[in-house]
Length: 163
Image (tube, rainbow, N blue to C red; front, side, top):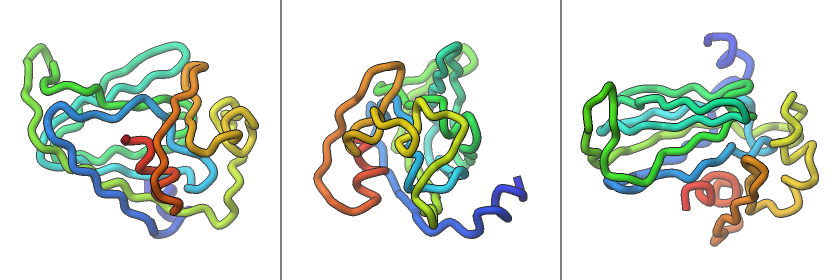
């Protein structure tokens, strides 16, 4: 892990999200071009289950309070991730009520906003279908239209995902 942080330097962008029970995040892959490969998400206050989906498989990971999820490589560029919209999660056979959850996501803007990753199907720099409308994300062959209400980079590439 030290290698990742040595390569990209310090994060320069922070997104804070406050989720009440029942709120989630739709399936998405964070836009490739504006941010470096590595970003991290710190989950605070309440547990929630995050779902990761590739073309071949689905995985569910319990995000415990104070857990840090590091996104990089294939997991960052090629797997959809989401948090289902619900008030309860099943963890190790137990039903757990969600409480208010705070998510802190740290990213670094690319100095050259062109991504040359190995996953062109999901890459807005390499796939014109993804880049046609900056307010759309591609996943599982379907485009999800996202609301846009601000013109800054954070709104376009971060907040819209959570709407």
